[in-house]
Image (cartoon, rainbow, N blue to C red):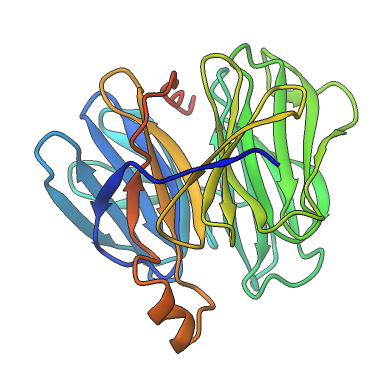
Length: 294
């Protein structure tokens, strides 16, 4: 197994989220965004000033995508909403599915401007979720019978997508039409992680095509080549890292959210940084998240 590199970064935010998830970065404002899903909060952090704001939400939000300077798209348990960045008003945009017990989970915007978004049961019920493709307001189901959709990210050229069902712990790859983000074939197994500690959680793909994955339960960010070879492992000071995002003026830094969900009192005591948000502390060759295209 690849050696674990000790943590050399720092804490970006000391607020402890029950389920920190869905980080992204808006280079236009220099602002990082992420969710506390179960706490129905959207966190906003201006990196240069350190100014932090928490916004209450009327739903379980999990993914935010920039549309333009005045609008953001948010995925939630109640569907897709457009958020006004000035007055914070929310307007319903599209429905994902008719399963009241489900919520949204992991998602990313493809270089063409389409969104891939996963759904799951609120208690991670077996096979209750799915992965959807959203192009403008058209929603298409791609994969059914997903328990915990995660690891969604795209190659720099937009010709491939990666994803997983954390319950199965297989990192998958599927070829795409780069103009539409729709699959052109069947998913293939890239890496079988079912026998290794922790679960494949959120992921991002850098400018060189490397896949940076938060390893839930293993306290690490792991890096894969496009062929599935694991080439690096970086420790974090929390056992349940949930999702990374490239941040900084050149997307050269890596933010990682974490969670304290499911930990008992003894586990909380042994994992005092659980739920905080970190910077990994190494220079990366990241890419800014594309805007969602209306």
